Image (tube, rainbow over all chains, first blue to last red; front, side, top):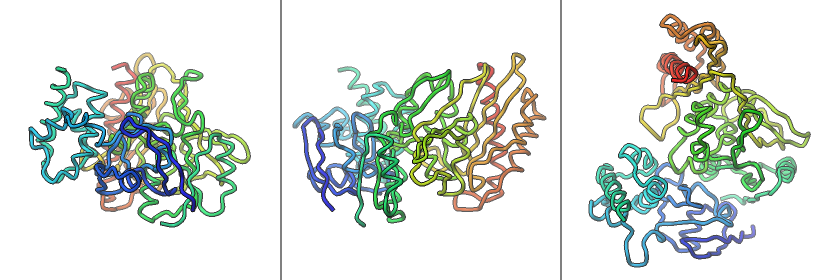
Amino acid sequence: MSKIHVSTIINGEPAEFLCEPGQTLLDALRDELRLTGSKEGCGSGDCGACSVTVDGRLVCSCLMLAAEAEGHEILTIEGVANGDELHPIQRQFLEHAALQCGFCTPGLIVAVKALLDSNPNPTETEARYWLAGNLCRCTGYDKVIRAVMDAAAEMRAQ
Amino acid sequence: MPSLQYTAPSTVQEAVALLAGAKGLAKLMSGGTDLLVQYRSGRLRPDVIIDTKKIPGMIGIREANGGFVIGAATSGALLGEHAGLGKAWPGVVEAANLIGSTQVQGRASLAGNLCNGSPAADSVPALIAARATVVIVGPGGTREAPVEAIVTGPGRTSLAKGEIITEFRLPKQAPRTGDAYLRFIPRTEMDIAVVGCGICVVLDANEVCTDARVVLGAVGPTQLVVDDAAKVLIGSKLDDATLAKLDAAARAACKPITDKRGTIDFRIKIAGVLARRAAAIAFARAGGR
């Protein structure tokens, strides 16, 4: 089976890769492009650890074929910080210790960024519903939500 | 993984030819949120996946003839962001938006939810209650069918080989139309309906019901259109006696199974409860409240 050539923009930079027809975007990101920040938790779209945005839209990269990325713009956790400078969401996650093992954190941060890009002033309820597809077995979510609300306030003030 | 081909045709005719002429198992993919789970678990071994999203018209919402036309691969997120659709058909939009997480909403489509053939599909009872139709293109041409004609059993549809659903049509509404969809799940998000109920009503100027559709999900092998429940609503103002009769009619129509999500008895009881609550919302919306 011949490989498929895919041209995309990943984290603002043009990127090309070869993939198998059945390969997911998550596997292509991790195995072909060595962007290993996106994690595979469940592989079935339930846990959100593989969250990325495609043309600004939050999706599970495990539930999308890599070949579908042709011509689209992908944002992964690797594109959230500005060089060495952490994004306010990342900083607030550290401030609030909104993680323990960290496996869910890349997906959570990408999901929170998608939320705050579309809704800069979410209620706590809106934030909790938005993040219902990002499972975290360590924090119990409370610290995550505090980090989200403080990051939102900080970003609004900027 | 077995060998698989991926193709993304740019016309519906090309997609029909690929689907009709495929050797082995060909599967259409819109959002892929069901298909790719089945593929990756090994439950489904397609030889070719035909991505429909590059076909013009498959994604998007437009108003036409006083109603709405929704491309078959339009994501739940786009449905939820369309102000006009949400105002006219809040029940349909809320039903579609109940499916999965924010991430799943970014991809999941009405066509996928319908053709996956699950009796518990959230968008389907609401679409049937709204008298939505689908446009189907196949080797023999184009036809239109009511949504309730598509699913024939769990995982099975009435679509012939080579047929593709290209769009959903929501009809022009009579004045004072209201719709609603409710489902029961044991948590607040990220689960599959134990029971679902979609209701659409039309009221006259005195707020008496002149037309109604009551549709149940997850209490039979397909969605159930409950004509007896609709008859109870027609001619009523949804008083307590009507609600009791609606509850009984909804329960009487149920043919559920017991599984890990709920027992037969529980599902039947909940179907009556959801019918009463969905009817109250539909009547309130139709009355402008």
